[in-house]
Length: 404
Image 1: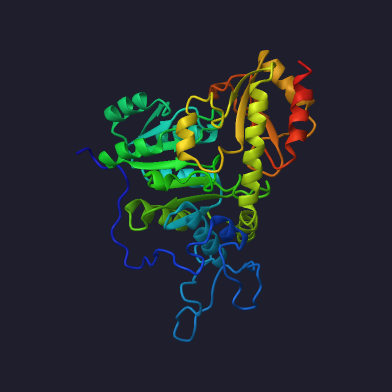
Image 2 (image 1 turned 90 degrees about the horizontal axis):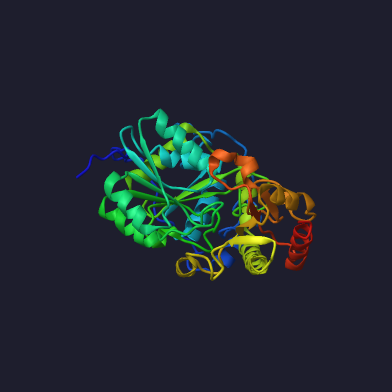
């Protein structure tokens, strides 16, 4: 048995987390989301929860907390708990932890691996994650191996040699929209006691549930589709096993390192989640329609979108994902970098901005944002498809491509 380079912990008798149960158990996700996880404010009957701004909580004459479990707001925040329960229910998990940003959530998971350990990460994923992992591992004597996990044989061969402590997947990947076989990779990880984490930001829990496919942890940048309105930073990690050493660490890391959301941001996230089902339905429908249209366009060299039958992992995506294939896609434009930039400059409805998952459609020349070191080709444009009428989106892209 290889050395265990995941951080380990003693049992903590004060840990009181348990499987969530409520009257909302068994509801369809659409209903669960519409009611923000269910319930109302017990103090006033308000259907919208209040924003608790207090950072500390009073104790009684015997120095017992007046509100059981409420001591200090770094963890003790009713809105955190409400949002975390809702997201855990959506994921089919046991518990979630909110973080101040998606990258804060990535960093918390990465810190599970001790110096001397190994992280096996998918190549060609979000550049911010890749760059952080490279720097973090270099600073902490952790081996980082990057491999194209959509090629299971290549992944298996690398896994067999490196015997990693943590495998990091992104499904579908950003910006290349590759799809990894989570179940198959999970089986391999379990055989070697390797922790598997999946970043499913581009899919949302309504389309992809990595925990049900064997992942140990699932992570989202809540900045993106979970919130859906491009007005907050947030991240979340969810587990299927609250008794695991990994989850004990994630919970302590959030509390001790303090990378928490503000109360207002948690409230905004909960408000955004109320319309997640409607937004995802429209965005997925728009994306598939647009992908098919662009796939036949003479000025487009290739469309990278798992919903297309021509996509290399379409059948796998179809098996793993339900209700759509996500609202993120990339296109390769004929004529190289200059042509790609000309197209972005001619757009009217699509906004030229980074990020994804909002109600508004965005387009990004990824190489300009991330640099040539990211390996992103100059002719690639990343599209985040919003909730506009699809005919307007098609018209906007057609007129922009007609300038080539």
